[in-house]
Amino acid sequence: MAIEAFSQGDDSRRLRLETLVRLRWLSVVGQTTAVLIVSLVLQFSLPLKICAALIALLAMVNAFLQLRYPSTQRLAPEPALSLLAFDLLQLAALLYVTGGLSNPFAPLISVPVIISSASQPLRYSLALVAVAILCITALAFTPYPLPWYQGVTVPFEPLFLAGMWFAIVLTTSFAAFYSYRVSLEASQLSEALAATELVLQREMHLSELDGLAAAAAHELGTPLATIALVAKEMSREIGAGDRFHDDVQLLISQSERCRDIMQRLTTLSSGSEEHMRNMPLSSLIEEVIAPHREFGIEIKVIEESPRAEEPLGRRNAGVVYGLGNLIENAVDYARSEVVVRVYHDKDFVRLSIEDNGEGFAPDILQRIGEPYVTRRSPHAKAGGLGLGLFIAKTLLERSGAELTFENAPGARITVIWKREFMDQKA
Image 1 (cartoon, rainbow, N blue to C red):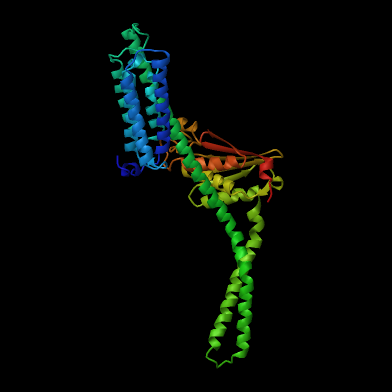
Image 2 (cartoon, helix red, strand yellow; image 1 turned 90 degrees about the horizontal axis):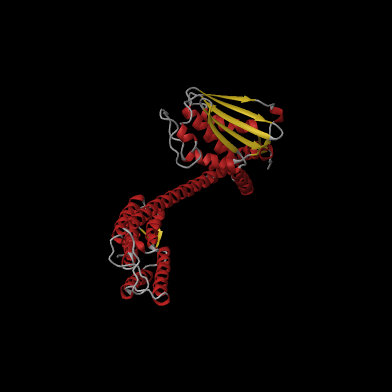
């Protein structure tokens, strides 16, 4: 098998060769131990030469792979299927000459299928399941008896073998499906969390730009003042008719222009620094609502508690993005109106977002917040509730919030914090 076969393929779910090699060495040790115990300790009769040849074949192929390819090599789906199919056939052949389905180790034939289901695309895993079922069927018709004491034959009724066939096929299929679903959900969750981190970093970066502008203005102030001073000294020495007079005047005017720009940056920073670092709840609500007022949907804010007693806390980029995403989804699905209700007391802060749309579909309502939930109701016109809502929910929960989703009769999302989380000041 050429090394290019291991390098090609676009699927991100790839099995590392070193992982497969180590599992194979474990299989070689296990098979060898089982054969030696059956033959030498229990002294059961079995085709020892055939068993040794099959185990040696697996060991040689494994040694070749370990020597030929680097341990970091990741397998594309096609070569991974080939190697796992080889493991399956080797194990099936070993079971075939040692009693077939009557061998107590027969359920191990499901192991390569489970490995494939946890790491490979679905169509390749289904192909391996088909091969496994063929091998299990062949084991039911083996002419080799189960290794037992010399001169003693253990009879197995056809009904027992049929039950074993059904049990192993069912175990293999269920284990394959279960491992595939668990692996797929874990992969999706990992990708969604990575996207969440990127969004949070972007929001924090935007929040820090104001401080960077102020720092840049401060650092450039001294050299710019030096340039202006030198230019004015030169202007005194150079007369109006000198050929460098216009150049010096241009230098002075441009330095003054730069000073004005930096002064505005500094003034902007000092004027908005408190707003950027510490902000009341009402300002937070207005900040997340403002970008969505121009889409033809009326957004009403109902404050159910006195503004004089509202929380004042540190600006949290994750909260700003998360609430903004919830408002955006409400606007997307509302017919004409979105209502934001704000309540706070000495213990809790509650924010509810309601739209007069069709609400959440019953099957989606139980899964909201999972990554890649992509539709809201059968008749919705707007885009899906997928990764964006998952990111919003994750960021808000990191801030200490608890979220609930319900229909009332349109969609209602309620976000609740303990007061202490919203009163944390910078």
